[in-house]
Image 1: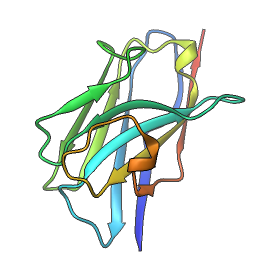
Image 2 (image 1 turned 180 degrees about the vertical axis):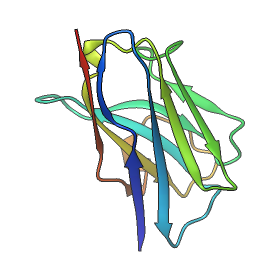
Image 3 (image 1 turned 180 degrees about the horizontal axis):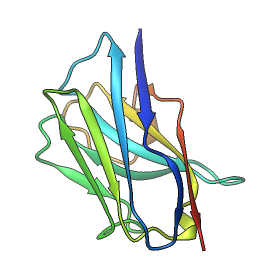
Length: 125
């Protein structure tokens, strides 16, 4: 059983920063591709960022490019999402996801096999 646990969410003012972390438990492989998605209230889940198993390739949604950075520490089996210059429209529940396709960095949620429970990020104006 694979479980992904997100942490680091919270309430921040517009222009502020947060860093989300995602650490798996149970049977995992540190080189799985990983992604972050988010879902705002009343909206569909959307892709935010992804990183390949090696960490050499990344992909970002246009809405977060230049503000968010995804990274990973395979020794700790942890993936991070550094979020800077936050905007009220970034308010959402953020989900970590893992893909057993090691090189996958796409935005298709169907390619991710395991999901976390989510962490709330609220950006006040």
